[in-house]
Length: 223
Length: 362
Image (cartoon, rainbow over all chains, first blue to last red; front, side):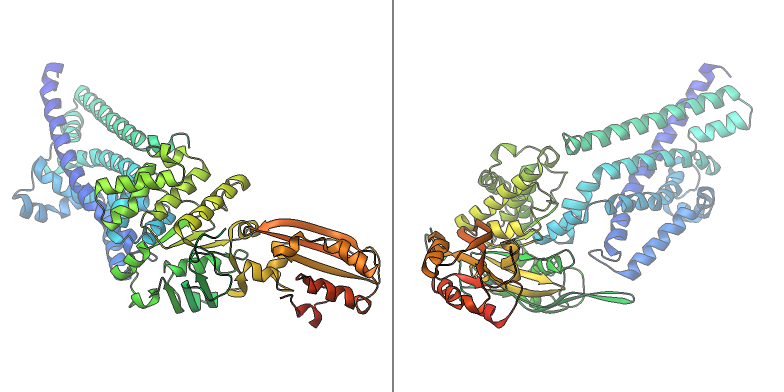
């Protein structure tokens, strides 16, 4: 296979990957953030302590995280079909990707928020702040650098997961490497695909690290 | 020195109590153990005074100050601040503070040992936080924040981030933030314990100034006797969850056998020979200026040895303490001792703890 033959395939793969990972990251962030916050708030010593809610949410998150992604992908086929009308193609792949990443990101959010100094929570409570104030003015802003770092990790994990989306005809770079490179012995294409993936992962990590650095620049200054 | 009656600290307990705790008890229960942190604490903090609660770690002072604004829920007893019974505002067992309690808390400022400033905000935004909670407009918040930063001497640091400040500056920001809601009461939780002695002094001076200028009532907890000595009008000593001694510093110093007085003002010195009488004298008020010892020696024709002595300022008043040695036993010295008491001095005979020491100079 020549480079000119590979290029359109790689382009399409990249577009599909970015499409799948982009949307599923967005959904995972929107879903995982409140779940992670809820896990902290409802825990013992939290502001909304509620053992039942905490245990149920914790259990759901743990189940979600322990399922191998490929199993989740297949198990969710009926749900995906219901939601997007089909279970084949990049759009359909977004559903399992997002659902797989929500519990993953939720745990990272939980950890990030737990790291916020409890003294700050006490301070805002002593000013008469309620739960909402505490979450939006203290917990989330203070945890922001860790949250961004967690999101970066989530994007990278999703890039890995998206390779498996090929199993449901999701397309993308991973699928390309698998079907052309591995099954049709197009070693050149496989290497090119892997190369693009490496560049992509590196780029995501660099951007994530840069964002974290910008966010903590002032906090660390002169320290 | 006092400008108006309200700004003067109440030397007796007939002033307006701003913070009152009644039979306050706090028990921490874990699975198989109960720890009583507060065991029936009755505290009365008067309007406009600086009140220090001192004790070792584990004595319950931290639980006490947290119970005052109900960051800790007392197990039993009541807390009232500025005439409002805060314990009545809390109903049920939920962890969420009800709106009425949140409003009451907004009128009680609090500063902390580790400052608890938000690193995600600059200094000005940190001071604005309580105003955001109170729902003030952006322009008003800015005006008030800058005014408060000016008051604590940090007008030029509005745009700095907490990480760029020194410990003393951070605590000043903490103080500005605590004052944003125009509180009548400021709670200070070991606010100077993380600071070096010099910074401690300047922060205490600031608290003192605010107490005077704004008529702010300050309740502080500390484990450093120096803090009590520098700024407090009244003090309480806590041990094992109880207040074992309390009162105005002046009165404590005039109370023979007071542990707080002895710690506030330690005098050392051991007798040079057996068969002598060792006497601790505390001078305060105008007696501090009189030539007591030479007068005593002349009047009774005895040799007075000074074993230890110190003069200091406690709560803005000159206080002196001296340990002297008189020849002869206690009985032989009945007249000189009576003479000293007549002079308005507090006279104690250390190490004997007898009934005689209970007698205080009026």
